[in-house]
Length: 93
Image (cartoon, rainbow, N blue to C red):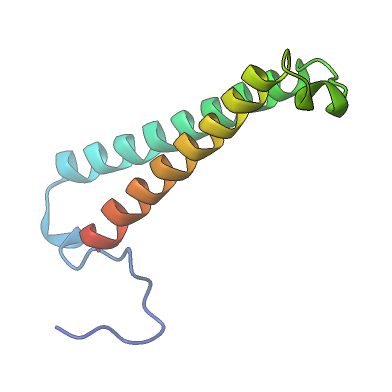
């Protein structure tokens, strides 16, 4: 079955064929996903709002290099996680 250009990619063509229990379970999973996303956003906002101010010149000294390395490795880790999530999303659809 081909999709019309205006039809969203997340449309389930069998939505009306399933029973009420399956539709309810889908809705519950959708709300759980949204709630988890909201919790994640709130946690990130709280963590970022509590970060101490750091003098950037300290990061270039030997005492600040572990902090700089930790920040760079965490950015690399987040990038890898986002790439994996993107690959899983593209492969699923």
